[in-house]
Image 1 (cartoon, rainbow, N blue to C red):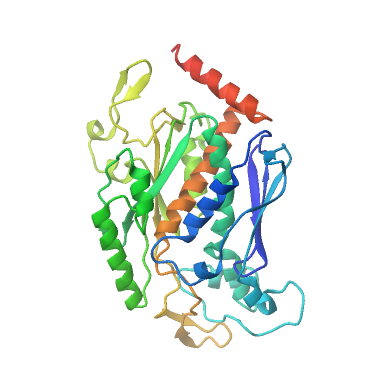
Image 2 (cartoon, rainbow, N blue to C red):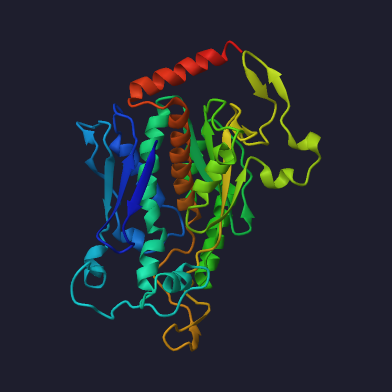
Length: 381
């Protein structure tokens, strides 16, 4: 079973993950993993932290001579900013009041975490709940995407909306080029310019912005997941993983939200046969009855505005219970472009998990063989 645990604080020494159940024999493209980490740090609207960090992955175990060997893969990303925070974030050393946080931010884990874990300093909460954690999750997802490429699965992700600015997405052959040419990772050039202007407006007002991203997985075989139990439904598994991303408050698969307001004839994908079973449309986002149906897997994630506002929000001092303004921690104005990379990575991990569940194997060679045999079997149906 593919699984991972990650650890680390936002301003701690490093972020680390242990990936267990990863098959042996995968040649690691470190440049690709680092490229995804760079993209997660990019995008218009990011804060000053990204000027300090230059995220690169380090493989500490489970890889030898550039190839996975079947044992747990340990990966790490050093926090360059730790040097500026080592007196505050040291695991051992003299206790300091420097950097102490006592005014929780509405919409953040601050207050509930402070109460749940009985801490005196909200920093103990915000350091781990920070979206900085998504850096290591992006590295894990990039590793899984390399595995998926071996069986013909490719992924792409982009920004659909920032604030009230919505893109008109048309799928060209060069859509990935258009995405990367956009400072907000949106292939609609006109919308991209309007999004940038909206971010600047938010910056001037001490505000933050949320938005919507979309990720697509192409080449997914039909039959992943199952209708036999609720927790084996592929849409449930994808939603679970994607809702685990900080600030994501809603998940849509295919045209899920829009389909709720249509007649049945307008919502479902009619079927035809052309050497294999296909759909005229893909409103279901590649999933029917809890299983992949062979069409593209399409997911959208809806991100709320970041709760760290320069102008602040009404809050309470947890030591005195007096009214005040919420704590301000150096933050982004808009992290929606970065979210598109994180969603792609989480989708990659969940799909790799589900693929290995169905075609489980200890080696990449055997994994590829089993998927290939399954594809050949489908041609006989």
